[in-house]
Length: 304
Image 1 (cartoon, rainbow, N blue to C red):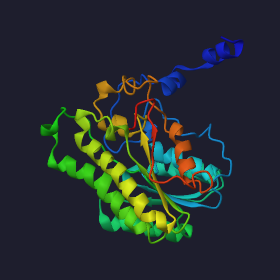
Image 2 (image 1 turned 45 degrees about the vertical axis):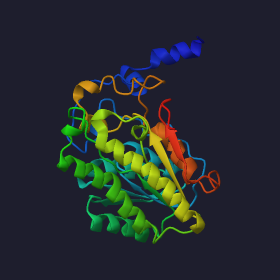
Image 3 (image 1 turned 90 degrees about the horizontal axis):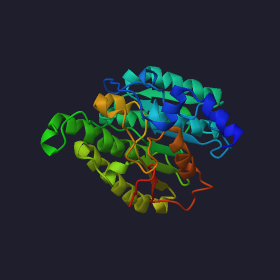
Image 4 (image 1 turned 120 degrees about the vertical axis):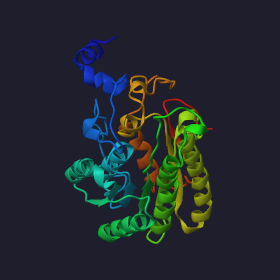
């Protein structure tokens, strides 16, 4: 070990180490959860993402853009030259305001659009408002999602009420938003959906959530085939276990310390570690011939 590496380890605080390596303390929130109430607060790239002008002058709508993966994508897109509109639940306003401040520090516009995408009228209005206020749309990131893991494993533990919430958020909302966005997306635009490792290696306690993520993979391939002739690329990112508010807000507290340890890399991922996948897929230069693919960012777990 070099002297520099030794000094880096000495300087690493307990919180820094937890953020990097996992082993988070037990904690619990109520859905949808807030970033500021997490211990430790996730890394969204606030201090690490350096833009290289890869999305100059583009305009993106990011659902679930207030926290977690959506927040990291918004920050990275802004530093790459993209204006962004964020869709989020009204209860997440404080997180959304924080994201907006980071986007504006990057010199880009940030449009805040609170609303519940489980309501079709709201879902369609959010898209139209984003396009109107940004002057058009070039990128749609379908990131909003919900899971519920605080229950016994198995299908008998799935209530109709919870299944409705998962399916309406993860699938119906995605359908409505995408349908409406096609009124604004033209040749050269891209759609990026968010799937999950759960589509490939489902947990018994997430049977409904895993089903929606498998459906999103299928939808991505179908849309890529349909929209390719219109010059619109459609891809998907499949995250592994990522440290976001969804975890303390929907998991049993005693599962938090071991969260992500079952990956080959032995730890959960941080939202910032997914941003590069989205920037690549959104770039009309770098990913001009990439459509219909699912890009896994899973800590080593297989997505095939």
